[in-house]
Image (cartoon, helix red, strand yellow):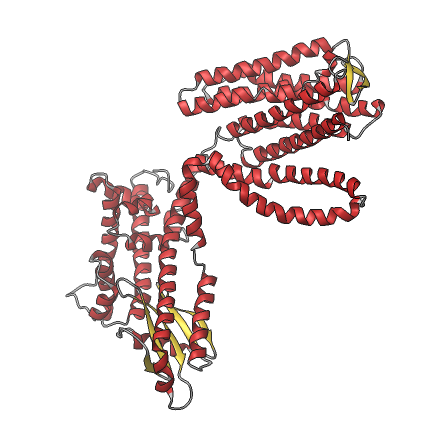
Length: 627
């Protein structure tokens, strides 16, 4: 291959990559930022670039000027709408700075109308362009009598757009926004340079020096592609209420899954076509082999280059992102926990020569079986927990099982139990004694897994509340729900979380219960402090569950009140409360669930009563979330 042919092939690859970039960036804007008028204006610019470069790519495969003429005329769809797209984008930029102009809106609509008219002239008449020709390998049309008029329209439209962009930058008051608009104003000239049909002006001058011509075209396309990415990156920050990190991570993920992958495939296919000629092998043979190798190798390649992209775009957050990934890798799902405990139970059953065993955990909703081998009756599970509640270590022999309590590492709270059926015969102690150290290690790992899962569930619950709040902040245009808060399916869960953090201080600020009218009214008596107001409302709801008469710790009618008052108001430990109320810890968790539901019922009635009072006073209740 001679140097000129190689240069033309390199330009083919650059044009293909730029076409991929324009299409990928267009889809990116329409997918993530369609609601932004600025993004829609930029999308029209990208559509014009895509149309023109699609025609350029097709022209590499055409040798007849007559056939090329049809594609050259179709390219004018992108060329003609470019000035209108500039007007569209920059009008949206000015509106962001408070500069609203009806005539500018009409000018944008008129520009799109003129663009459509110019396209119809280009595709159906010879008034604008005519007679496709080829100078070397460069196809182009000749200028018609109306082309000078179009040139005035094109240059005026682009210049007006660029001037508006710099005016929007000048009007911007916030330094961060001004910096981003500077990037945008500096890069938005790329679409105009990329689509303008300059060969209509220079004729045969540049193609007379083919090496210079193709070198300049390739270099220009590389610069244009870089500027397109900069333009879209700047537009992505406009009118979007999400943190910069989210935009950057979304940008990196999209680049690696879209433009980079597509360009990688194009390069491989280009090399494959050359390789098939060199080896003398048919393309149909090499294609499936190289396609499989490309898919596998890109997975490794993307992992290699991702740190580079993160360093470029997320330099300040790299260490924190790495920490978040480590936490994600350490997360334990419910399935992970079950499989892990099944593995430990299987090892214990094999070591003790027993085909039957089970693991249970204690949750706020009661006793939950996690793993089991063999036929296990519910009565055995209940009996297991009642046996281990007062014991410190295992094993405990009861009801034909060896039972080990599973407790937390710090404050020894009972988390669950693991039980293995004793083998038949009277050799139990002989079998068990040599394995004590090994069994103790397995039990400790099972207890640690249960504790880690419990801590993770609490953390995830808090994160879900934060995520819901962030989601509301990112979508301010959504109207608040008019449904009463107390009818929300998560209302009881919110009550449970608020009680769990009764003395938690600022964490109560995340509670949706702060939107209750009774809490808003209580703030007036607590100096506007929402935390103290919510605590007061919760305490009042608990107090309404107090029976009449003298307080008794073990009386059934006092059970719910005593449990709530000692657990949440006094903050006593579960074991201490269970001993004072003469309950097992597992039974106490079940009663606690009923007590929380009772508090939720009382709060709901208090809220409805407050709404009725407001209605009687002639003040219509506000929708929840409007305070």
